Length: 88
Image: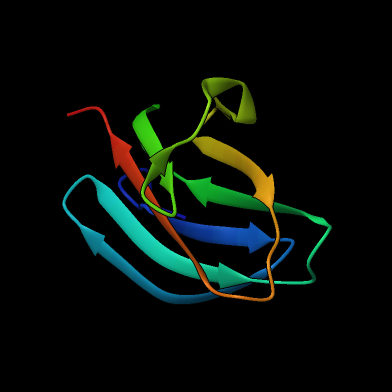
């Protein structure tokens, strides 16, 4: 993983339609309802905000350390849209 990469590197859910636009990463997830999703993202800086289904995720649900961002949220059998915006 390059220091400038912004991409999903591991997940406890299915990740689809991953797209990067500058400092923004968008993707959709789905998984087994009633379980926890965890997505690990290679990122060159901490996030400015994380959106799950268009709603701002509480900062206690994600952490950033040494180029990796870990995001936690509830899994759903229906697709969930995720957007990660890094500080510029």
